Image (cartoon, rainbow, N blue to C red; front, side):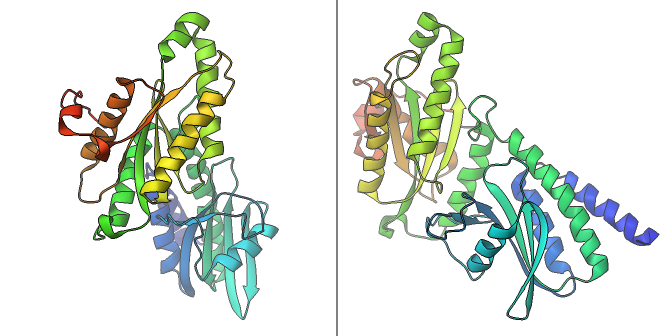
Length: 323
C-alpha cells in the first residue's frame, strides 16, 4: 500500500470506530462498499441459523425485514456462502458475477454477514479485508453493549432503537387494514420479590435466566426479546394478527405456569398493544403498561390487550417513562 492508501485506511477505520450503534456502523460500511468501483450492490443480513436448509434458516435483511419467510434476489447466494464460510471473507463467482461474502463469526447473536456483488480490484480488496476486520470487532463490542449482562437478551437502551425502526417500517401504512402487524408486550413475573426474599438473589437470578431461555424457545427468531429491568421483560412480536398474538402470548403464559423453576412454580402477567406508527413510542409503551397494570391488579397470571380495556379501567394507572 502507498502512504496515501495507508492514510485512507486509517481514516476509514477511525470512521467505523466512531459509531456507537450496530445500525449506524453497518449503514456506514455498506455505504462505503457501494462506493467502490465495480461494486454493483452491497447489503447486510442477520442469520438466525447456521443450517444451509433454506426452510430452517431465517434471514433478516438490514436495516429491517420482519417477514419470517424473507427472501430477496441474494438469498440463494447467501445460503451457498453459509455452507462454505467459517468466518472472514470468501469470494464466489456464479453466472459470471463475482460475490464477496463477509462473515462476522465473533460470538455475536444473530450471525451478521455482508454480501457484496460485483468486482473489487486488488487495492480496494485489501481495504475491504482490513475494514471488515475492524467492522467485525466493532460489531462484537456493540453486540455486548446492546445486551443485558445477566440474560443476554437485548437491553432497555436497544429497545428504543428497535421500536423506532419498527415504527418507521410501518409508517405510511394503515395499520387497521393490515392482517399481520407488530405488537409490543410487557411481561412481569408475578411476586418475584418473594423469590428473592425467600430464596436469595442467586435463586432470583436463576429464575430470570430460565425465564429468558423460555422466551427464546417459545418466540420466533423474527421477534425481538428484551430485558427491561428487574423482573420485567418486553417482547416485540412481529407478523401476527389480532387472534394470533393472543394465542402466542397465552401459550407463553401457560408455558411459564407449567415450567419447574429453581424456586418452584411462578406465573407471569402480560399487557400488550399493537404498534401503531402514528403513535409515539412513549404512548405505545404506556398503553401496554396499563394493560399489564390491569392484569396485575385483577388476579395476575393473565394476558390483557390494551384495546379491551374501558376508560374507567385504566384511569388509575400510573404514568410511565419509557426511555
